[in-house]
Amino acid sequence: MSGMGEPGFVTRAIWRPAWHRLDQSLKTGQAGRFWFFVSPRPAEGPVNLVGAVDPLAEAGPALQFFNRTVSARHAPEVRSGTVISIVHPQLGPLTSVDTSGLDYRFVTAAGTELSVNAEEETGTVCDAPDLMVSDWSVEVLLHGLSDPLRDLA
Image 1 (spheres, rainbow, N blue to C red):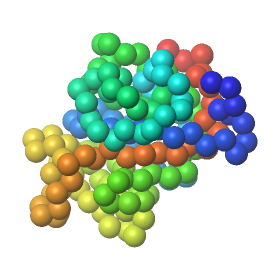
Image 2 (cartoon, rainbow, N blue to C red; image 1 turned 90 degrees about the horizontal axis):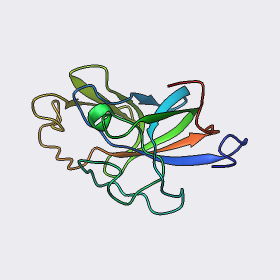
Image 3 (cartoon, rainbow, N blue to C red; image 1 turned 135 degrees about the vertical axis):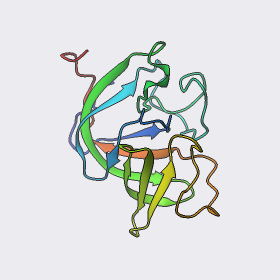
């Protein structure tokens, strides 16, 4: 896709949790390399926030953050850029999603931290059991996202 790395260019991508520490952590302002599923679909089109077993089997954005659940069927591509926003359709803007532990930590822009089980009861909010979230997918806006980096496997 041409223009991805141009100054001011913003790219939308979807992050869908696979849980079990299979996902990339994200933080607003984070600059670096990110892994995405390789998708033949064009960049135009609606963002679909509904989860699926095979994330590339349904309509959605051209870019979706890679997780290791389907790595046998889909190789990742690596791009560099900067996360400028993370938005959950129910929780609103987030400052980060930390996937490093047995519980994922979703931090809202208001500073609320939600610990979400990522192992035995995936998707259950540990510190607010009455909060029901059916889909933990988030929309991520990235600034200056590069074309795929070819020097990485």
